[in-house]
Length: 251
Image 1 (cartoon, rainbow, N blue to C red):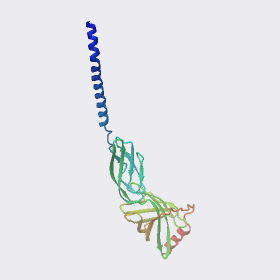
Image 2: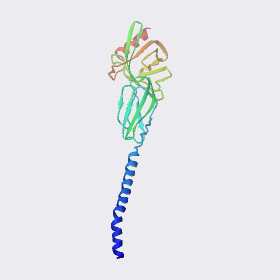
Image 3: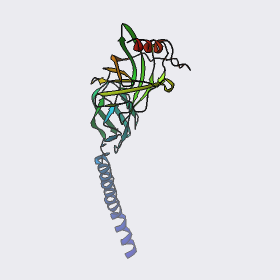
């Protein structure tokens, strides 16, 4: 009889107990859903470093991305150029101050970071120089490269290719003062010096020409978009250079 009563009680209470358990499971399930729904992905934090915040025209700048919680990136270099690379490089073709902006994009949204880059002018490029001596016009190309310490390397020539030489190692720019020296031929002990001043835009210079230490005349030089192709001859003292020597001797 007792066994029968227990069975009846169990039979009556089981559905209630099961209902309570199911209700608890439902509540737990809803709680988990609510918790998951309230959990957000972290918002990206955009940041970056640059290899050089002050650079010369044409100098390559490296941008190192240090952003967090981002999956893609968009760069605006401030000069009309852009990139979607994670760690891009860029070279500016004009002088100025540019605002570089990085947008970091992730599941949690977007974030931006910006820095200013200052681009300065330099002497690197193709130049055309000229001066007049006793009614005779002399001219020709420079190919110059300015280095970080202000030293200049490159080549010099007359327009007819008669005086091609590498410029001397002591050629340099200090402030706006420019010195370009050319050793044409040690046999003749001939040294030509261009001593002058470059403008702020580094696309024009004016000054004086010396043969050894003797003043010869004034020169002007300007950058050109056309790169010269001088003829490197084995005999340097010919044509225009020879004519220059003749004019100097007559003078």
